[in-house]
Image 1 (cartoon, helix red, strand yellow):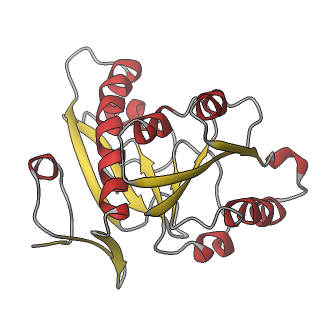
Image 2 (tube, helix red, strand yellow):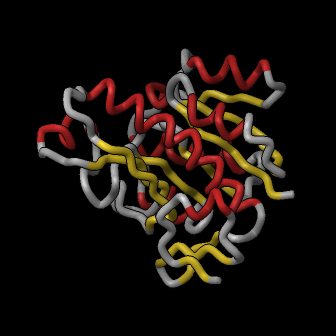
Length: 213
């Protein structure tokens, strides 16, 4: 059984969706850079180990990342899942977890990297928005795309209503991608996300670059 460590900074709704998905995975820890992150209480209630590596206690990003990596590596995870972890990571940290760290971003990448994605999609006149799960690389929100799910942008939408519609898809998409990894179907090869095996009905609803039948 593959092991997973999840990083959060806040309420951890995507972390909850993964925990509650019934995956054949050993979720060894939930770690936050914020001691007041609400998701930590949920993890403790579920009997999952938790830890805080407060970025405010370190003089710079490099020192924080080294401390964070040390805490992650205590749990020896096969996969590191960024679930609303609001920190930009150093190249050394990213390289250390190359091919085994994934992130979820609330846009259809490569469009709208960074923050305020829903507002920017509406302001740009997009008819479709969505969510992307990708492998993490040194480029912000720029790693190889694993899967995406789209939602319509409706007349009268504001960033809050659009965000709520996208979040529902996040809670479906992220557990599915983690399931692929822990089932041994997902890997990073030559800079591409590759999914092996036959697509299920759930898979077919998603855009999955690099799928191998």
